[in-house]
Image 1: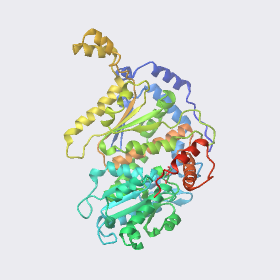
Image 2: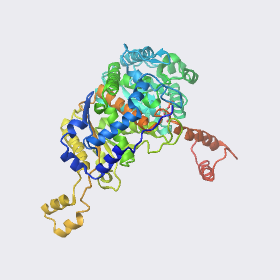
Image 3: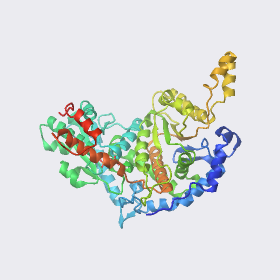
Image 4: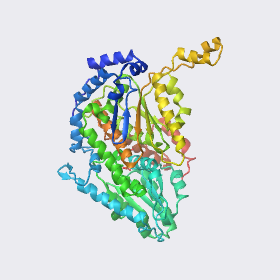
Length: 555
Ligand code: F6P
């Protein structure tokens, strides 16, 4: 698929850029009475607020023209209809089909996949019911108490983030407590070791989650977990059947590993790893929240799909989000987006989005293999508020570089100390305001004079106590953090990513950039144990290997 990239240098966009570079956010906020009406969208329990972006009505017009020119509507329709939008792997990217209701139809390559999707959901529901009611027991007949998900990247981050976010909503299992959830991703043995020290082999269910079932980290951890279990279960292979289930697209490798494929929950190659939380990869979520909770998560995402597919561009949250990123990165020159959830439950959202966005959008060539002419994926990073305020916000407010920020907050607290909540959210609102408005030298000086500081101190400190402001942010507020709202939020980001890829003409669904490191790690691993000449390496790598080889802990 060759795409003609719309120009980011249209006269209207260039005029908008020149205008926005000569007016501050402070002035825009004061002089544009339509801002709130125009730049806030409410959908599926979310309130998205772009009023603090450096955009006026005409700049939005120019951006929407860009979206039209890039063909965002036909791109969405092609994706929905199952076209092979993942061009380098010749596959559809149909995570939307995973959240369709049972009554819907979605034909991919001549086959309606909705039935398959619901068949797997029903199978998941069966296991969830058996585990949560204590019918599915471990080798000694005791009910399952802990679940350990072994997976990495897209087979880890989604369920890990969602389970943490919805922790207050996890219902009690058979023994009157929510299940204990653990996630092991890193091949560093310390990660699995730490979990195995806390769980009881008699009551632990392992989920080995890997789309390919060929990922070194996951298989290494899964083998060690199996050895640990067999060690406790007297080597009884029947224990593996009771304590291990697999989630994968690859039945052959699952069987080869030693997990009965009757204990496998499948998905399909048209589900990308980082878009797979809606598939059986979401099994930890279903076990933790119950199937109703998981289905509500899917329904929230489906509501967002409908919004994105059906809402005209100016009210369309995903199109606007994508355009804001293009504006900040390609026109204003930012290189990162800082994700700042003001909610402990959303602590893992930055990490989740890091994979979703950076693995999807970190591309240097278009679909047709030609180099992209502009910057693509922003660096995505962030941390939970208010912690970040006492760590890196200094740079966000007064550093020489500016980066756009994205605040995420939830109106309703779900814990026993709700009196903290206004303090938390006051900080979110204040930070967005401070970044946008800043503080002029005059204001800083007046403040210091009012504090009674001598005029020479006022003059000396004024530059240090001045804030440039004009630093854009988006504020996303949720009424409540429940499965539906979280599903809608995650789906919104997914749509934004695809639309950005469309605007840049790149493939959001492959990840060739992770392959080289994997390949070389295989060779280096062999060379750790090779005496004499192993694989050829550059001098720096050879020297590193020579230092490490005699010192490395191997067993
Ligand atoms: O990091 C590369 C990657 O392929 C991701 O895209 C994927 O989510 C992760 O590895 C795990 O892959 P798998 O689910 O096949 O084990």
